[in-house]
Amino acid sequence: MTKIGPLDGNAMAGVMHDLFARDMTTMGYKCTSCGRAGVVAEMAVYMSGHGTVARCRACDTILLILSEHHGMYCIDMPGMTQTVLPLAQL
Amino acid sequence: MERAALLRRLTWQTATVISTTFEAPRVKTITLTAPDWPGHRAGQHVDVRLTAPDGYQTQRSYSITSAPEDENLSLTVERLDDGEVLPYLVDELREGDELEFRGPIGGYFVWDNELGGPLFLVAGGSGVVPRRSMLRHHRAIGSPCLEPLTYICGPTAFVETAAAGLVALGYDPGRIRTERFGGTLM
Image (cartoon, rainbow over all chains, first blue to last red):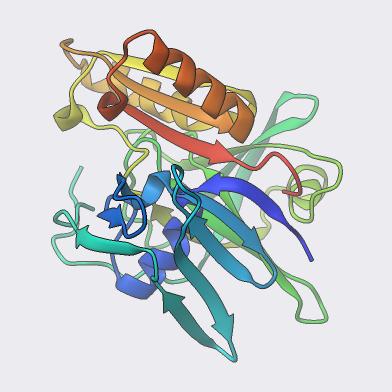
């Protein structure tokens, strides 16, 4: 399996736009573990054949997990809270 | 340039290669035409998907090198020996071929006039591609100057070293945007 990383949230931009019908990389959040504020584009992102994991740059807590099973996407966001999404711009 | 007022779903579509140009022995610019291309913002990218005869699919992201004002959509890619997609794009793909892609993608590592300037664009390797789009757009619209906005793009280690260095020099981290490429199996 191809392993690519570490990258950042820009690498998830296409998948997330596909799922949410708009760009999500400017969404702000706070890490539930250390409280660090950030935007999706700056998450530490690790991609492999199993899926995508995004971690907090400060404390390494898993913020978001993306995987695909049988044509369905699973998004788990165990480590992020207070999400703020600016208006979509095209 | 008009922008669609409605939210747009990101669907896979087919582009046709108009021309290819070697910028350097291992660096190729691919110019495309696609029927419903809505235009793009400087710094955005597209996802390209290849399908093998046995159905195996793989996709990668490539930054757009053309400016929003340019007549056609262009990507510039650098051949890496152990890639799944790049050897095909650089060695095989030619004028008249079709390419499956979706885009434009991205809302963070982008620049347009409303974000201000002047721009400080830091790029390593193929990180120069989004920089080129931004530079051409900046020149085309004749953007005025105020407080610097920094964009750093390239391999991960390069980006993190440059960003840390600038912050240590006193640059406002809130005015630095980054985009990391893996630089491994692409």
